Length: 205
Image 1 (tube, rainbow, N blue to C red):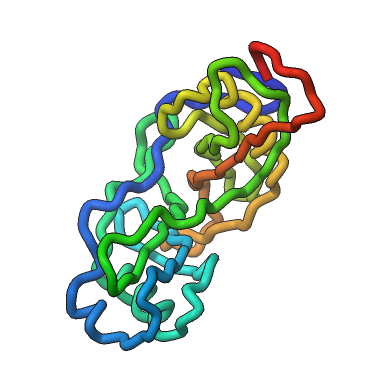
Image 2: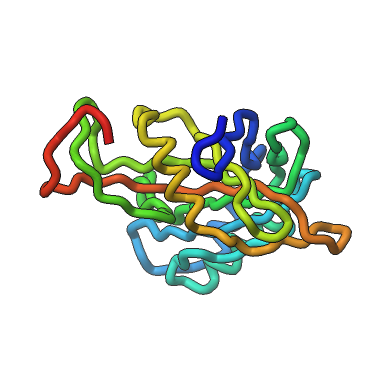
């Protein structure tokens, strides 16, 4: 399916985590004083073999030791199901992960990582704000060549708009594979839609 200059790919998938990289020893190893949860967000490049190649902090926890230990644990222990392209072949994938550290009970949901924020008219039957995830296919030159809907959500009508907006994020960084060559990869993008009170409601965005 094609709209504008972006192809909607139907079989693309991101890497999916198969194990829990952090363990009780990790949590016990880093002393910190906050009782409430602290969150760390990191972006991980995953190879076609499902092993992480690089971990970059994109939102710090505010505690240097937590940032360092979380990244090291993911690099050492994380195992992923590799990303897939539209031909169902394993490709390099980029995934953003959030971890929570908390001394008291289960932590609440961490703040979302958002790439694009939009204000739209109210839509009947759709609760706003809402975030729509899409999967981007990026060529070896960093150009976005494809976009498809991410996890199924109630905001299906917004997926096309989300892809149209997400393609404007390009060009994206070039990733070098294990052979030292620029490579195609798949990554996620998140587009948040919020209500613009100055626009009258309708049945479609």
